[in-house]
Length: 327
Ligand code: DGY
Image 1 (tube, rainbow, N blue to C red):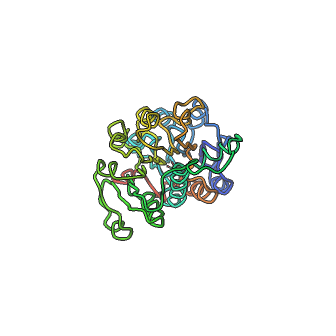
Image 2 (image 1 turned 90 degrees about the horizontal axis):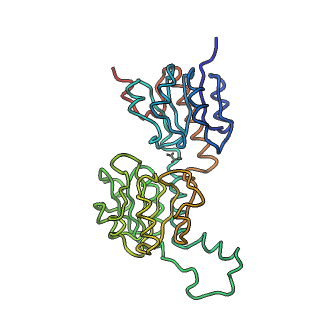
Image 3 (image 1 turned 120 degrees about the vertical axis):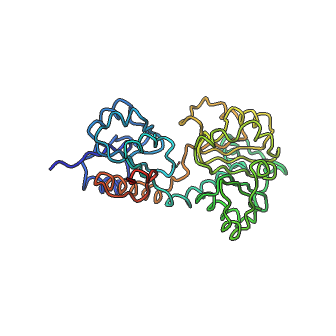
């Protein structure tokens, strides 16, 4: 009997591909860094039972329309804003994702970005490489302190909490804003709840950890940036759409905030001509929050397991839309 087909939109670690191959016939887009061309995706899903994808490939209504036999979509990510969940749910197609395994790794990167931005690590590296280091200077490449400063975390989910634990090790005062209060985090880490405006006004480091939803779309815009301290740093390793990039560019250019560290952008990838890249007070990364070897491998394996469960009609390990199982 022929094995059901799964379309894998990016080459995954061998551990995951091996699992998938045991029970499915695979179409794998072999590049690890180039996205699958749209026409190839639409053609390949026409007889597919499953899709294994990632944050960079839009799985929209058109993809679902081209995939009449589709039984599961599985993304190698915790975020799923690139997938049309409403259409999937209407069509009773479960969507799998990979929460949990990436929280600590993403918090590590978030903190690394915070430290690099505050202490001007990238600028300092460039400075040395460009032969500009002539002598030690009392105020050369100075930045704000991290230890003992106030951090405001917007979005106190698993990753937000992991960032808060790191902040606690740096004796930071921890503020947070979230849809719901988190008494256990308040108790364990001394985190204090604030309204969004209070958090923006009081924090030295504003760290965005909220998912991309219609409610969080450009939640940090010109008004919010104007509430931040002139000495404050904005860190975003959640989703680029949470920030109005044009407003951020203006605030950074006019030095109305100190700096920003960004792992995510409104449109990814950004080109080398992006206006933010003209500014020294910005550290940019190419969406690598969860990019440790171990974590990315675990994510790929869970994505494979979700896809295999889905093609067999079994419950996924982590389902974004469990409503598909009702009725
Ligand atoms: C996610 O999982 O949503 C990240 O953005 C990619 O690791």
